[in-house]
Length: 182
Image (tube, rainbow, N blue to C red; front, side, top):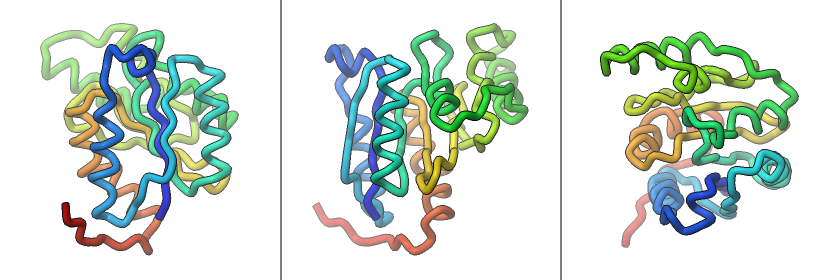
């Protein structure tokens, strides 16, 4: 099954961060029967992100969005999904619980930046992130499954083997694992 990747972040566009995440995603999913057919990288521009999501959603049954879920003002993925699907951003109880537990384990109180990560499109489901403060997002847009992950490589790796793979298998039960030799 063919899927698309959308990577976001000015740091990817300027070369300050080298994109190793798309290779990790492609290698992880190939053995499960999912092939990356299209990859797009955009900066932290809300309108560009929404436009790319709209284009890709018309072409592919699934998109993995990597980046833009963190606590800073340039993390725009949740807002882009809200615009794309016309679903308002609301405080998600599961995301709130996750952020509070993450902060508690570190002995700090959740601040406004942390709590920004709990505002998700009303129609969204949570993808568990066992490592970081930002939960992933699963959302259906027309006939396309959108799966969103943080850009931090260690968080992405943990989610690929867990919640992302589970969501893909649930959404596309006919995809079959295969042996990949390198």
